[in-house]
Structure formats: structure tokens, C-alpha cells
Image 1 (cartoon, rainbow, N blue to C red):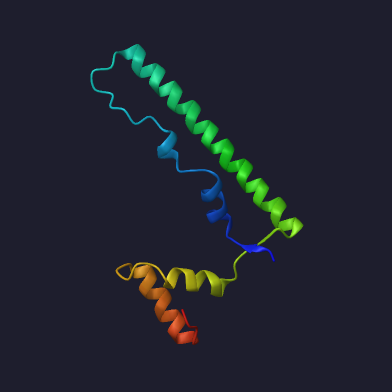
Image 2 (image 1 turned 90 degrees about the horizontal axis):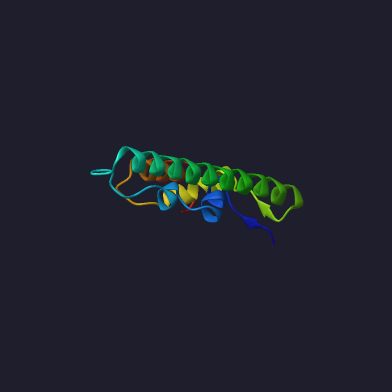
Length: 105
């Protein structure tokens, strides 16, 4: 049976967030040349990260076409949102919609 996963979740699963590959050290006390090198390094990392995301998106489309994975239905996405943290307005709104439509979450 094919796995049900959204494109956003698939890409996040394959490629981590940018901050893990970004320039995290402080710039205070850095010389101009060091700052330029750090900025160039960060730009390269960001470009590589974006390229990896683009590859993951194209891989997702190929898997969809081959039937390896399936996009979640609107109801499945709504249930997923309804199971979120109780304090979030989006979770509360999803729960209200589920109740209104008679969907158990």
C-alpha cells in the first residue's frame, strides 16, 4: 500500500531546515574579509539547501506518478490539523470543522 504524505511533509523529511546548515556564529568582532567569506559560505549553503529541496520536490512528483506515495485527502489533512496542540487557533478551528462535519479525530 502506498504511503500517504503531503509534498510539504515529504520535503521536510528529506531535507532539514535551513538553520541547520546556515551561518550560526555571531559576526561581532569579525573583520571585513572574514565577514565576506562567511557571507559567501552562507550563500553557498543556502543555494545547496534550495537545490536539495528542489530535488526532493521532483522526487515527490515522480513517486506520485509511479504510485509509490499518495497525497492526503482534505479530510486526512483536516484530521491531522485537528490533532495539533490544543492552544493553537488552527487546531481549534480544525476541531470545530471536524465536529461540524461529523468526523472523528
